[in-house]
Each structure stands twice: as structure tokens, then as C-alpha cells.
Image 1 (cartoon, protein in one colour):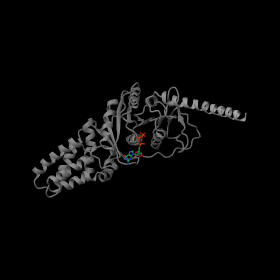
Image 2: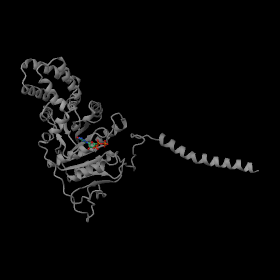
Image 3: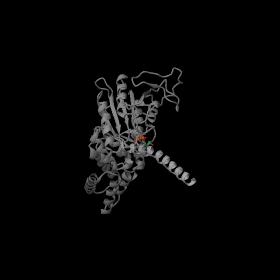
Length: 402
Ligand SMILES: Nc1nc2c(ncn2[C@@H]2O[C@H](COP(=O)(O)OP(=O)(O)OP(=O)(O)O)[C@@H](O)[C@H]2O)c(=O)[nH]1
């Protein structure tokens, strides 16, 4: 009898355990099967039906909150909802003048690209330049990521000029190298940023690129560049992928008195935020609206489509005047394949080459421009707030050779 009871008890417990596991199993299957969005299954999903959450505008200045506290928000329409009792704003920073920045940052460029500039100079100043020296010249250029074609062309030209030059003084070699490198970097390209208001609307600038290349940092630094040039700027935090990106951007803006339109939820619809930012920029009659976008790998089709959508949605209200592709100089030639895919989706108007302070691959400037036909317009030379400089061919080469 007791034995029968025990068997019945085991069966009941067994059924209860199996019954409890079935819903868990079904739920797990549902999560993996029902994923249809453009994002990865483990990427944050949009939160509400509009996918936007509450749009806020961080408006620094008199109402700026103390750091670490929730910011007082404006509705995206520009209505100031700040508490009257908000503490006094921290003093705004004064960005360094843009003029002469590359010259100021020359030491960093020169140090990291020592082999390219001074290495070449040393090689070409040797008493005799035999085949092995030319091989070293070639190797130096290839290591600096100038690219195979440009390296071959440059070596041929230098060989010819060294032959004609006869006796070589260091000054002659330096002048020759400077001239040829400047030609390669191409001083004729238009590197100006289209950041003037037109047709009664602000200029709109989008910043795109893969993860971690320095997009948000670049938007923050560029806001400072524009503030230093007395422009009225508004930022749009359309990077809703990385949890801290919007806050990071708003902090950059707040330091120089620039407002940021952002959402209070992660995974909000980036196109909606970009749209609201441009709308606020038009209403507030600013000069430039800068839209930061989320990092995306160039081989993720859904995410690349999303980027195209962000641009199209902005274009319902204004033209996109600049699309800056941010590339990390330390990734070398890999940046080139990224650039090609991005330029298929959005029309790239300029390159920002970041982290040039930490790489000997300054030659990538040449390779990018040659491959894409798009000028490098800005370079990042450090993590400091003012370590972004407008690119200038002559100053760049001078920094390499100094
Ligand atoms: N040394 C150096 N570091 C830089 C430069 N530009 C950006 N960084 C650093 O690169 C890191 C990534 O920068 P972010 O601006 O967060 O990159 P992101 O592209 O917005 O990143 P995702 O939003 O994740 O795609 C930060 O630690 C920056 O300080 C530069 O010119 N030089």
C-alpha cells in the first residue's frame, strides 16, 4: 500500500516539474523565433509604439543642473520646463580658437608618425641611396598605410628626383619630400564644412561610423569648434543604442552652452530624435544642427538601412549638408572597407580621422582620399576637449617632417 502511495507521489511531483518547465521553454522559443527587427536580438528594442520615449531638450545655461542630477527638460517643441529654483549654471567653458590648432597639436602628430616623416628624411639623406634604401623607403610608406599605388608612385618620383638632384643637402631632401607629400595629400581638395544657414534653415550635419571610432566625442569637440566660431549650435542624440551616449553628448553640449535633443529611453527610434532635433533647430533659428548616430558595423544590413532612414527623415524638413564619416586611424586599411559601405548608404561629404595621436599610420589620409574621392576635413589628435583640428595638407606634412 505504502509502496503504491510512494509511486503516486513520484508521478505527481514529476508532472508538476514538467508542467512548470513547459511555459519557460515556450517563452524561450518565442523570444528567438519572433525577432524580426533590423537590430540584433540582443540589441535594445524600441520602448513605445512611436519608439521615441519622451523627447527632452537639455538646454544648458541659466537652467543647467548640477552634474549627476536628472536634467531639467524642455519638450522637443522648445517649451522651457525648467524649475525656477534650479541652481546657478556652472561657468561655460571657452573653447580654444580654431585657428592654428593643427600647429598647436603638431608635436603629437609628429611623435606618433615619426617613422613616416623623420624616418623618410633620414633614409633619403644618406650618402648613398642603393636598392636596399629604396626598399626601406617603400616599406616605411606601406607601414604608414599610404597604400600600394601611392607608395609605388611616390617611390618612382623620388627616385627620379634624387637622380636629378645629384648632390643632396638635408635641406634639399626635406624640400623635395615636403613637396611630394603635400601633392599626395592634395591641397586642392575643398575641406570646408558646409555649416552656414540657408533657405531660412539651419545647416544639418550628420556624424556616422562604426562602433567606438569616436563619433560622440567628435560631435562634442566639433560643437566647441563651432561655438569658438560664434555659431549657434543644437545637438541631436540619435545614438540610442549605447545607453550612455545621449548623456555623454548632452554633457559635451552643456560645457559650451549648446542644447541637446535626446530621448529619455534607450533604444528609442533614432529617426524620430533626428527629426525632432532638426525641428527644434529650425524653430530656434540656430546655425547648425548636428546629429550623432549610433555605431554600426558596415555588414549589418538592417542597421545600415536604419541609417539611410535617419537621413531621409531629416530631409523631410531640411537638407543634410554634411555627412561626416568618422574613421579610427589606428584601424588602418580596415577603415577603407567601412568607408566604402557607408558611402553607398549615405553620401559621405567628409572624413574625420580620429586617434591620429596614437598611430604611426598617418598615411591613411592619402589612401582614404584616393579611394573615396572624399576629403579628410577634420582630425582628432587626443582625448582632450579641444584636440580636434581642421585638416590642412601643408600643416599636416610639416608636422610629419618636423
Ligand atoms: N586618443 C584619442 N582618443 C579619442 C579620439 N577621439 C575619440 N577618442 C576616444 O575614443 C573613445 C570612443 O569615443 P566615442 O566618442 O564614445 O565613440 P563612438 O563612436 O561615439 O562610440 P559608439 O557610440 O559606441 O559607436 C573615447 O574614449 C574617446 O575619448 C582621438 O582623437 N584621440
